[in-house]
Length: 272
Image (cartoon, rainbow, N blue to C red; front, side, top):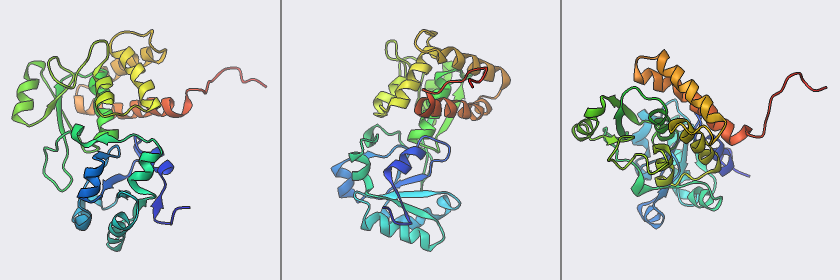
């Protein structure tokens, strides 16, 4: 049974990928990190002995710290934060427990570089303006599983590569770049593959996204609904960033359906 200031792997796994996910901080020593350079989805890496430097960034947020085994390193960093009034928790069993439970871990060398200033920083991505499917689905995936603070730039198609160079941003969902379609698979698929996010709910969601994005509604019954909702949102918002903010809930709902409710149905009249 975890201590009052610990969170279990199963509890944290239910939160990651949702709007209620805490700020997850990897405080492993350099030696332990080099032993397994993979990170929990959405986590940031920070030196355990400098954890108090994040105080301004963490105030008012729920914090979960993890080290290799959930012992002295994360427990000590947690205590330092709680001492200054930040209600941090430590992951019970640490990264080893997360790994042994077959939870997804992202290779650190695949994570985007952080362009904005530290202490936490954030990645910057750029793509074509007037998004519909992939250019909303990918930002949702990045913010929920890769970098919660990620910034997205929507620009004219001809300017994407130039903006990427000038603003140190990563281009996506255009031809000729790394983060784009591969064969019949869309950019959302590419990101799942590269980030090794091969969980059943996300793979199911990828089928829905691919069907909507590539006009293959035979892939899943839900693809046509996602396309309809996405086109409706694109007509409701002239501002691409307002559309992205509004669409986050749409993908949150689809993800929770993929994770928790695919076996549930609804009918009328109610059977008595």
